[in-house]
Image (cartoon, rainbow, N blue to C red; front, side, top):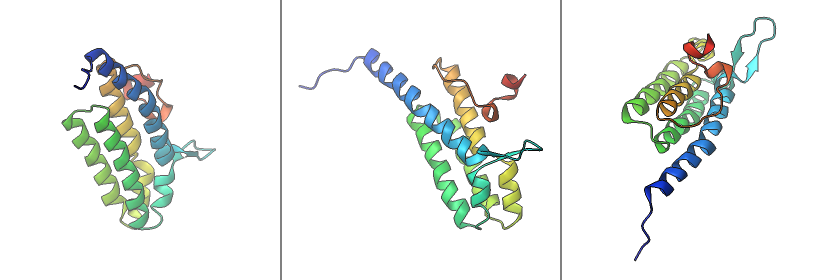
Length: 145
């Protein structure tokens, strides 16, 4: 006979998973969208913008990494509506980002991964999960004030 798992034990494992996996997702989004800063103007860009210099291939590779963030959000219990919204951001990023020149400019300004991590953070916070403080690039408009 298999032992019964209590809901308290399951909740503790879920909390540990959020505590372990969410910071990894935030760091990955930062690397993809905001890793480097142009000193004089303070504008940030990441691996996604640099990879888009290689049309289609670069965007497909960073899109696959972005899909990993969406998959982890699903594992952390994000609802279907949120997963679809996050996936839509990734599809938009890959589709427009694959267009030579225009796509590179788009990738510099549209930071799908930071948006997705912000959306996931808002959902998890609404669920009462304890999260580390957001990076400045991943704050919502309300948090920036």
